[in-house]
Length: 233
Ligand code: DC
Image (cartoon, rainbow, N blue to C red; front, side, top):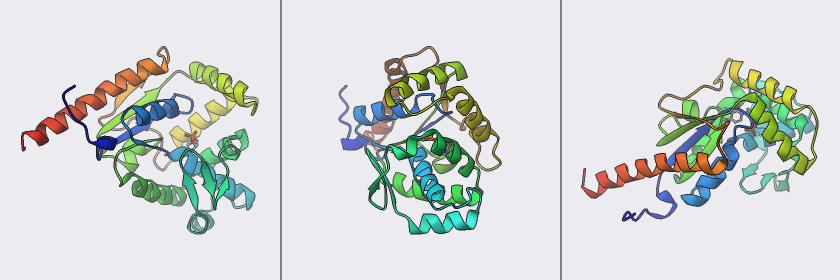
Protein backbone atom coordinates (compact mmCIF):
# COMPACT_ATOMS: atom_id res chain seq x y z
CA UNK A 1 0.00 0.00 0.00
CA UNK A 2 1.13 3.53 -0.66
CA UNK A 3 3.70 2.38 -3.19
CA UNK A 4 2.89 3.12 -6.78
CA UNK A 5 4.62 0.31 -8.67
CA UNK A 6 5.31 1.12 -12.31
CA UNK A 7 3.43 -0.99 -14.83
CA UNK A 8 4.81 -4.53 -15.32
CA UNK A 9 6.69 -4.11 -12.02
CA UNK A 10 9.35 -2.42 -14.10
CA UNK A 11 12.47 -4.49 -14.67
CA UNK A 12 11.93 -7.26 -12.14
CA UNK A 13 13.14 -10.75 -13.04
CA UNK A 14 11.71 -13.70 -11.15
CA UNK A 15 13.20 -17.17 -11.57
CA UNK A 16 11.25 -20.31 -10.67
CA UNK A 17 13.00 -23.67 -10.78
CA UNK A 18 12.00 -27.13 -9.64
CA UNK A 19 11.16 -30.65 -10.79
CA UNK A 20 8.30 -31.67 -13.10
CA UNK A 21 4.86 -31.31 -11.59
CA UNK A 22 5.87 -29.11 -8.65
CA UNK A 23 3.43 -26.41 -9.80
CA UNK A 24 5.85 -23.98 -11.46
CA UNK A 25 3.54 -23.17 -14.37
CA UNK A 26 0.50 -22.47 -12.18
CA UNK A 27 2.59 -20.32 -9.86
CA UNK A 28 4.22 -18.40 -12.72
CA UNK A 29 0.82 -17.79 -14.36
CA UNK A 30 -0.57 -16.53 -11.06
CA UNK A 31 2.37 -14.16 -10.49
CA UNK A 32 2.25 -12.89 -14.05
CA UNK A 33 -1.36 -11.78 -13.51
CA UNK A 34 -0.80 -10.31 -10.04
CA UNK A 35 2.34 -8.35 -10.92
CA UNK A 36 1.63 -7.80 -14.63
CA UNK A 37 4.68 -9.76 -15.75
CA UNK A 38 5.42 -11.68 -18.92
CA UNK A 39 5.36 -15.41 -18.20
CA UNK A 40 8.18 -17.27 -19.93
CA UNK A 41 7.90 -21.06 -19.81
CA UNK A 42 11.40 -22.16 -20.81
CA UNK A 43 10.31 -25.82 -20.93
CA UNK A 44 7.98 -24.93 -23.81
CA UNK A 45 10.97 -23.71 -25.81
CA UNK A 46 12.85 -26.96 -25.13
CA UNK A 47 9.76 -29.00 -26.03
CA UNK A 48 9.07 -27.14 -29.28
CA UNK A 49 12.60 -27.68 -30.58
CA UNK A 50 12.38 -31.30 -29.47
CA UNK A 51 9.22 -31.76 -31.51
CA UNK A 52 11.00 -30.45 -34.60
CA UNK A 53 13.97 -32.76 -33.95
CA UNK A 54 11.64 -35.76 -33.62
CA UNK A 55 9.80 -34.85 -36.82
CA UNK A 56 13.06 -34.42 -38.72
CA UNK A 57 14.63 -37.56 -37.24
CA UNK A 58 17.51 -35.60 -35.79
CA UNK A 59 19.43 -37.34 -33.02
CA UNK A 60 18.58 -35.73 -29.67
CA UNK A 61 22.27 -35.77 -28.74
CA UNK A 62 23.76 -34.45 -32.00
CA UNK A 63 24.91 -31.00 -30.89
CA UNK A 64 25.82 -29.77 -34.37
CA UNK A 65 22.56 -30.87 -36.01
CA UNK A 66 20.59 -29.38 -33.12
CA UNK A 67 22.46 -26.08 -33.38
CA UNK A 68 21.58 -25.90 -37.09
CA UNK A 69 17.98 -26.73 -36.29
CA UNK A 70 17.77 -23.93 -33.70
CA UNK A 71 19.21 -21.50 -36.27
CA UNK A 72 16.72 -22.49 -38.96
CA UNK A 73 13.41 -22.87 -37.10
CA UNK A 74 11.49 -20.04 -35.48
CA UNK A 75 9.84 -20.96 -32.19
CA UNK A 76 7.58 -18.49 -30.40
CA UNK A 77 6.39 -19.15 -26.86
CA UNK A 78 3.49 -17.34 -25.21
CA UNK A 79 -0.11 -18.25 -24.53
CA UNK A 80 0.29 -20.40 -27.61
CA UNK A 81 3.48 -22.04 -28.84
CA UNK A 82 4.33 -21.96 -32.53
CA UNK A 83 6.97 -23.48 -34.79
CA UNK A 84 7.36 -21.35 -37.92
CA UNK A 85 3.81 -20.15 -37.32
CA UNK A 86 2.28 -23.61 -36.77
CA UNK A 87 0.36 -23.91 -33.49
CA UNK A 88 1.97 -26.77 -31.52
CA UNK A 89 0.62 -25.83 -28.07
CA UNK A 90 -0.89 -29.28 -27.54
CA UNK A 91 1.51 -31.30 -29.65
CA UNK A 92 4.44 -30.44 -27.34
CA UNK A 93 2.64 -31.87 -24.28
CA UNK A 94 2.50 -35.55 -25.25
CA UNK A 95 4.39 -38.09 -23.15
CA UNK A 96 6.63 -38.88 -26.11
CA UNK A 97 7.74 -35.25 -26.32
CA UNK A 98 8.08 -34.97 -22.50
CA UNK A 99 10.37 -37.93 -22.37
CA UNK A 100 12.38 -37.00 -25.46
CA UNK A 101 12.82 -33.41 -24.21
CA UNK A 102 14.50 -34.59 -21.03
CA UNK A 103 16.99 -36.48 -23.22
CA UNK A 104 17.53 -33.50 -25.52
CA UNK A 105 18.05 -31.32 -22.41
CA UNK A 106 21.22 -33.29 -21.60
CA UNK A 107 22.92 -32.03 -24.81
CA UNK A 108 25.38 -29.24 -23.82
CA UNK A 109 25.42 -27.51 -27.24
CA UNK A 110 21.64 -27.38 -27.31
CA UNK A 111 21.42 -26.02 -23.75
CA UNK A 112 23.93 -23.32 -24.67
CA UNK A 113 21.62 -22.13 -27.45
CA UNK A 114 18.62 -22.15 -25.14
CA UNK A 115 20.41 -20.13 -22.45
CA UNK A 116 21.17 -17.41 -25.03
CA UNK A 117 17.58 -17.32 -26.28
CA UNK A 118 16.12 -17.23 -22.78
CA UNK A 119 18.43 -14.39 -21.72
CA UNK A 120 17.29 -12.40 -24.76
CA UNK A 121 13.66 -12.97 -23.79
CA UNK A 122 14.37 -11.95 -20.20
CA UNK A 123 16.21 -8.77 -21.16
CA UNK A 124 12.94 -6.86 -21.57
CA UNK A 125 12.44 -7.14 -17.77
CA UNK A 126 9.09 -7.51 -16.05
CA UNK A 127 9.28 -11.27 -16.41
CA UNK A 128 8.70 -14.48 -14.49
CA UNK A 129 10.63 -17.36 -16.03
CA UNK A 130 10.26 -21.01 -15.06
CA UNK A 131 12.52 -23.97 -15.78
CA UNK A 132 15.32 -26.09 -14.37
CA UNK A 133 18.37 -23.81 -14.65
CA UNK A 134 16.89 -20.34 -14.51
CA UNK A 135 18.23 -19.21 -11.12
CA UNK A 136 21.46 -21.18 -11.50
CA UNK A 137 22.50 -20.47 -15.11
CA UNK A 138 20.11 -18.37 -17.22
CA UNK A 139 19.48 -15.55 -14.72
CA UNK A 140 21.77 -16.05 -11.73
CA UNK A 141 21.22 -12.38 -10.80
CA UNK A 142 17.40 -12.67 -10.85
CA UNK A 143 15.75 -10.41 -8.26
CA UNK A 144 13.66 -13.16 -6.71
CA UNK A 145 14.55 -16.84 -7.00
CA UNK A 146 12.19 -19.61 -6.02
CA UNK A 147 12.86 -23.34 -5.94
CA UNK A 148 9.48 -25.03 -5.93
CA UNK A 149 9.43 -28.63 -4.79
CA UNK A 150 6.92 -31.35 -3.81
CA UNK A 151 7.17 -35.06 -3.09
CA UNK A 152 7.11 -37.42 -6.07
CA UNK A 153 3.81 -38.87 -4.83
CA UNK A 154 2.13 -35.47 -4.76
CA UNK A 155 3.52 -34.49 -8.15
CA UNK A 156 2.22 -37.74 -9.65
CA UNK A 157 -1.19 -37.10 -8.06
CA UNK A 158 -1.37 -33.61 -9.57
CA UNK A 159 -0.27 -34.79 -13.01
CA UNK A 160 -2.93 -37.51 -12.94
CA UNK A 161 -5.60 -34.90 -12.29
CA UNK A 162 -4.32 -32.77 -15.15
CA UNK A 163 -4.03 -35.68 -17.55
CA UNK A 164 -7.57 -36.81 -16.84
CA UNK A 165 -8.64 -33.48 -18.22
CA UNK A 166 -6.41 -33.78 -21.26
CA UNK A 167 -6.58 -37.57 -21.73
CA UNK A 168 -3.05 -37.73 -22.98
CA UNK A 169 -1.55 -40.82 -21.43
CA UNK A 170 -0.55 -43.53 -19.01
CA UNK A 171 2.48 -44.24 -16.82
CA UNK A 172 2.88 -40.91 -15.13
CA UNK A 173 4.88 -42.05 -12.11
CA UNK A 174 7.55 -43.83 -14.16
CA UNK A 175 7.80 -40.84 -16.47
CA UNK A 176 8.19 -38.34 -13.63
CA UNK A 177 10.83 -40.47 -11.88
CA UNK A 178 12.74 -40.92 -15.13
CA UNK A 179 12.67 -37.20 -15.90
CA UNK A 180 13.69 -36.30 -12.33
CA UNK A 181 16.68 -38.57 -12.65
CA UNK A 182 17.74 -37.13 -16.01
CA UNK A 183 17.16 -33.51 -14.97
CA UNK A 184 19.10 -33.95 -11.73
CA UNK A 185 22.01 -36.07 -12.94
CA UNK A 186 22.89 -34.61 -16.34
CA UNK A 187 26.43 -33.23 -16.55
CA UNK A 188 25.54 -29.81 -17.92
CA UNK A 189 23.46 -27.51 -15.73
CA UNK A 190 21.56 -30.12 -13.74
CA UNK A 191 18.53 -29.15 -11.67
CA UNK A 192 19.85 -27.64 -8.42
CA UNK A 193 18.63 -25.22 -5.78
CA UNK A 194 20.07 -21.87 -6.95
CA UNK A 195 22.23 -19.85 -4.54
CA UNK A 196 20.01 -17.38 -2.73
CA UNK A 197 16.76 -19.13 -3.69
CA UNK A 198 13.81 -19.54 -1.39
CA UNK A 199 12.86 -23.21 -1.28
CA UNK A 200 9.11 -23.76 -1.15
CA UNK A 201 7.77 -27.25 -0.51
CA UNK A 202 4.30 -27.18 -2.01
CA UNK A 203 3.37 -30.76 -1.05
CA UNK A 204 0.77 -29.70 1.51
CA UNK A 205 0.00 -26.26 0.13
CA UNK A 206 -2.66 -25.02 -2.26
CA UNK A 207 -1.70 -22.87 -5.23
CA UNK A 208 -3.14 -19.83 -3.40
CA UNK A 209 -0.98 -20.54 -0.36
CA UNK A 210 2.15 -20.90 -2.46
CA UNK A 211 1.31 -17.76 -4.44
CA UNK A 212 0.72 -15.76 -1.23
CA UNK A 213 4.04 -16.87 0.20
CA UNK A 214 5.97 -16.03 -2.96
CA UNK A 215 4.07 -12.76 -3.51
CA UNK A 216 5.23 -11.64 -0.05
CA UNK A 217 8.83 -12.15 -1.15
CA UNK A 218 8.21 -10.12 -4.28
CA UNK A 219 6.52 -7.28 -2.38
CA UNK A 220 9.44 -7.21 0.04
CA UNK A 221 11.86 -6.94 -2.88
CA UNK A 222 9.80 -4.19 -4.56
CA UNK A 223 9.41 -2.19 -1.36
CA UNK A 224 13.11 -2.38 -0.63
CA UNK A 225 14.03 -1.38 -4.18
CA UNK A 226 11.58 1.51 -4.45
CA UNK A 227 12.35 2.84 -0.97
CA UNK A 228 16.02 2.98 -1.91
CA UNK A 229 15.20 4.67 -5.21
CA UNK A 230 12.78 7.16 -3.68
CA UNK A 231 15.33 8.15 -1.05
CA UNK A 232 17.87 8.70 -3.81
CA UNK A 233 20.33 5.97 -2.76
O1 DC B 1 9.23 -27.80 -17.65
P1 DC B 1 8.96 -28.91 -18.67
O2 DC B 1 8.51 -30.18 -18.06
O3 DC B 1 8.07 -28.46 -19.77
O4 DC B 1 10.40 -29.21 -19.31
C1 DC B 1 10.60 -30.21 -20.26
C2 DC B 1 12.01 -30.76 -20.16
O5 DC B 1 12.94 -29.74 -20.55
C3 DC B 1 12.43 -31.21 -18.77
O6 DC B 1 12.68 -32.60 -18.73
C4 DC B 1 13.71 -30.52 -18.46
C5 DC B 1 14.02 -29.67 -19.66
N1 DC B 1 14.28 -28.28 -19.29
C6 DC B 1 15.55 -27.95 -18.90
O7 DC B 1 16.42 -28.82 -18.83
N2 DC B 1 15.84 -26.67 -18.61
C7 DC B 1 14.91 -25.72 -18.66
N3 DC B 1 15.22 -24.45 -18.35
C8 DC B 1 13.58 -26.05 -19.03
C9 DC B 1 13.30 -27.35 -19.34
